[in-house]
Image (cartoon, rainbow, N blue to C red; front, side, top):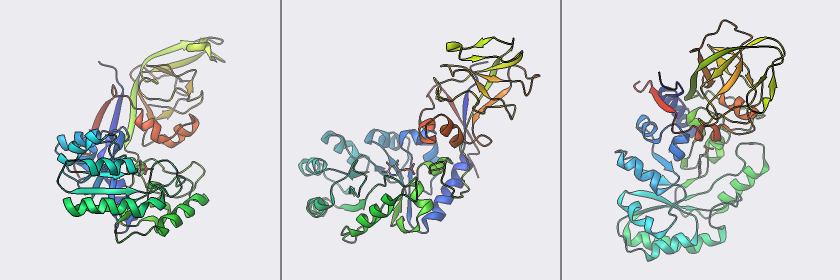
Length: 362
Ligand SMILES: *Cc1c(COP(=O)(O)O)cnc(C)c1O
C-alpha cells in the first residue's frame, strides 16, 4: 500500500454550494473564483463541474491559460491583471478578461501592438487600500480605456473589493459601499461582493458577484458571526493509522517531548502532517476522527505524522480510517483552533496529496 492520505472532493457538494450562490445572487451573474488551484480543490475539475458559471476568476494569466489549455471555454477573469506588458499577448490570444488596477497597466495597454477585443475590469479602491485606482483617477483612466475599446472592440466594467466583509457589522462595509455607489458608473456593469457579502448583504450584488470560499463549503465569516447557511464541505482530508502503540504512564511523545502520557494508554500514529498541509500549530486536544469517533490530537504535529489519543477506543488497529476535516469535522473549527483560516488550510493541501473526485455526475 502507498501512503494513504487523500483529499476527497465531493463535486455534488460543490454544485450544491454553487446553486446557493446562484440563488443568493438573485439574478446577478456569478463569477466563480477558482484561483490558487480552486482553493486547493483542483481548478480544472472544479471548472468542469460548474459549466453553469457565468465566468471564472483566476489570480494570474498563467492560471487562466492552464484552464484554456484544458479546454475550458467559459469567460475567464484575471483578478490581478497582467504583471508585465508581455503578458498582454497571451491574455489576448486566450481571450482573457483583465482587471486593470493601476495607471501603469493602462499604459501597457496603450503601448501594446495587440489587436482584438479588450474585455477589462477597472478596479477602484473604495477603502481596502490594497489594489485599485483611486476614485479621482476614474474619469481619466476610463476615458483612455474607452478610447482603446472604441478602436479594438470589447467591454469595460467596474469593480472593487471589500476589506471587512467577513465581519458583517464592521462599519467599513457601509463606507465602502457608499464609496462604490458614489462612483460614476457610466452605465457599466459593476461587481463588489465576495462570498461573505453575497450571503450577508442584498445591497452589494450589483451585476456580478464573485463567490470563492463558499463554493468550497467553508464559512466566509469570522467565527463569532452567527449567520445561518446551508453550505456543504467539498473536501474531506483523510488518511489511516500507520501504527498503534501501547505507551506507559510517564512516556514522553514526539518532537520536543511536548506531551507526557498521564496513564498507560494506546496512541495512534496517523499518516498526515504539516508536509501535507495539516496545520503544525494545531494544539493538543484538537479533534481528529478515527473510525468516525473523536480521538484528540496529542503532542506536536510532525511533517508526515501526527499522534492521537486512543483511550476512547482502545481496540483500534493500524489501518483505521482517520479524518482530519470534512463533512463530520468542520474545517472552520480546526482553522480557529490552529489560529488560521479555512482559506489557508485548503490552499495549503500539498500537491503530494492525491485528489479523489466523487459524485461527478448528477
Ligand atoms: C479571492 C477573491 C474573491 C473571493 O473571495 P471569497 O472570500 O473567497 O469569496 C473575490 N474577489 C476578489 C477580487 C478576490 O481576490
